[in-house]
Length: 53
Image 1 (tube, rainbow, N blue to C red):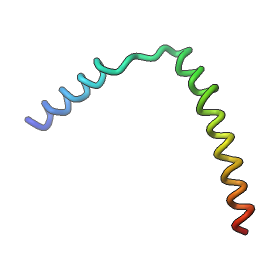
Image 2: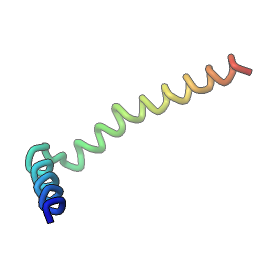
Image 3: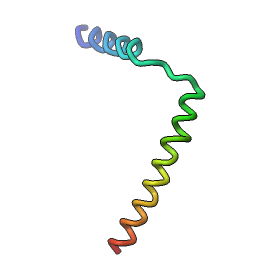
Image 4: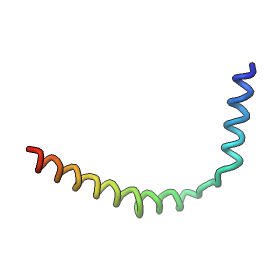
């Protein structure tokens, strides 16, 4: 019971503490930040594989 109460408190605390993102904010973050990081990651991985072989 104590473990259950701890996790309920933890999830409620996290939910109330962190700001809620709107849909447009999440989409902007995905396209402007994560997409660019993914493309950079592809090029870095390709370069590593090219130089290792």
